[in-house]
Length: 358
Image (cartoon, rainbow, N blue to C red; front, side, top):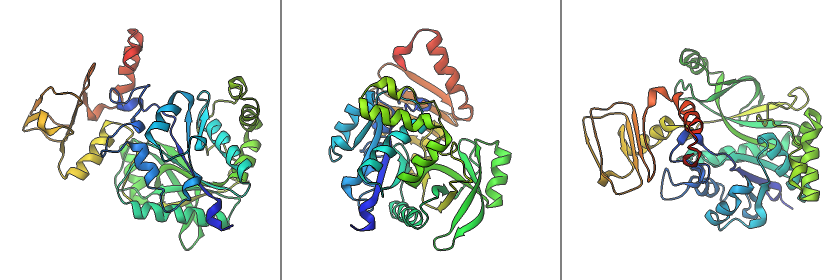
């Protein structure tokens, strides 16, 4: 059996994408929608794996409420390759479930996990990064590799990884020193200038056996819950898993070293309306972006995003850094410089018992 036969990819697709409300809803989150092209984000993600990973080794990890829709959106992915959590228990529990599933299938499995809702335009560079990660882990099976995106701007909405010391020369791989979540603009600018920080893409590569050992060392309940659920099919067994969101930060990096594989492909996590606007503006070559230009009229607006999924005309004038989203039941007008207001807005909907709009 060739080394590549032990290479697996798992697309993680359980999130709700609330920061892109009202386009992204609980019943149809952003990864299941066509935001960058005529394909859904998850379909684009799966397509980027073609030619790098044996197709039968491409898996999707999701929750029970999304599994049916994902199966319909990805007809080329076998139903048995969709690993389903009965309920969401945080990303660490999800990783324990799919890693134990693949380990039991192939104890030599090397897994690359990636988010289902990112935009990547330089597919060749992305695929080379995958190959670099697989190659590094195959030669260093006790490590866990993270993809670090070389930052192109001081972004305050992303997490960062600080690196130290080189582990491998060709390709260059560094040791991870620490994680930083969403720094201030001044701090982010210093990170970019230092050259020691990378954006955390939340793409990981690891031997299934190593991750399971590291998780069992960090909290035995994680692995016990996953294995019990796989044995019994009883969701109560899975719900015994502790809620741990940070899938890699729970690992003791002294025992299981974390390595950073640098990457320089054009990337966006589409984490909020500003990120989506930036990604679409780069494609359009202009800062005024409308997803349905025939139904949009504008005079002297800049740095805006207008989205409409109906036939109504959306007219804008003299705006800057504004998002206008028109759906069949909600109209959102948002200042892109105040994205922190989005959680408050969703909380207000809940407080008014308008959860059917979430």
